Image: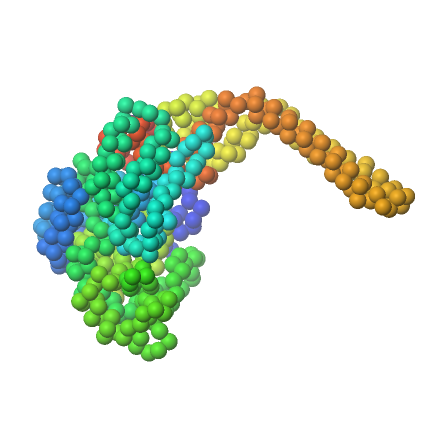
Length: 542
């Protein structure tokens, strides 16, 4: 593998300003995760705080034992018992086969940043990945995309299930899952690693009961050498630790709502749009029932909280009792989850994607409500993987990796094709259509005046003549495409690999394509690359 970098400007003003360290946005965040002096202060702050390390480690040990985590991961869990051990943390939903590549990129970012801090500050730092197991939006995680005949195809896993369940409680149909995996693998070229991949995935399916089980086991397999620690946000043992903060969140919900409203206002005044579109009545906690989870809101009746669908209502005392005695019935939303994460873990930095960084800009003052400090926020590394055949195809068109990332490949393809034709016949056909119309309109007028009963026929006559022009144009198009079929197929391979469906590679493609081609050590090799720390885009040539 070879790694290089390119600076790509985001279309999002906030992200550009964040990456460039502009004061207009940096004031909405905590310490700079890449500033040594600020991080030394952060380390001292975390050291001065108290955490329920013993109960947290007990919960993590139970989870890691259940999923046969590696010795390296188990050792890192035990390290968290020590007062001088910290974490770098980030999270994602439990996507099938890990979901889009950006989940893998985020984990690599967490691992790399943890290693960087260990080297820079001579402290023990554990990489932690937070699985959003309480998430109920199964339709967001029940599919991946594959490439078939130079086209991107969405491969959805269907099974009979009630989608009101959280990912951690949605039971997998193992036989259907194995069929789905077989269908996915058939879209890949057979390699010396294919049989091993099928065997391992089927074994993981057999050992899994839920979406979270399946996700956790796959992640542990891919990152077994990296000592990655996983936590399920829907873990009942973790919920018990969270009970006291749930109670405080209920008590302070009015302050949180007010502070969030003020933060949004200041963000807009600073020239940025608000990211979180949440009702001002929300108390930023979910209530879990047999019908699924529902966001809790302040009712029109004083002192009453109700679910968004108004099926359940509670007084503050009743809700606080639930928090203390049955915390598994509650969970956080995007506003309060970062607070809970900071409460649980001795965090040196949070690693987020572009969307997360954008909404965290609204949260800084909410940490203060709970006597917490917003952790430094690091924008995860962005990668594009270039296979050898893709690099070779680019060279055929005198393109390099930087060029295809900085502009539209579809536009480059169109320009190349136009250059091959060497004349703008499209303009000639456009002129011919205009001339045809100019010639035929007088004939339609004649028809109208001489034989009015044939006016509809005259219009149809014009459309038929126009259709013949269009037919000739299509035939020429088809002939040109046929002449350049082989080279156009190369363009399509480039597009499917680098900007599938017109989107960044990491948002569409899945890691299993690369595991099938390069083996299970592929992710470990990615973790060993020397990444740049200036928020540039990482180019990896395989």
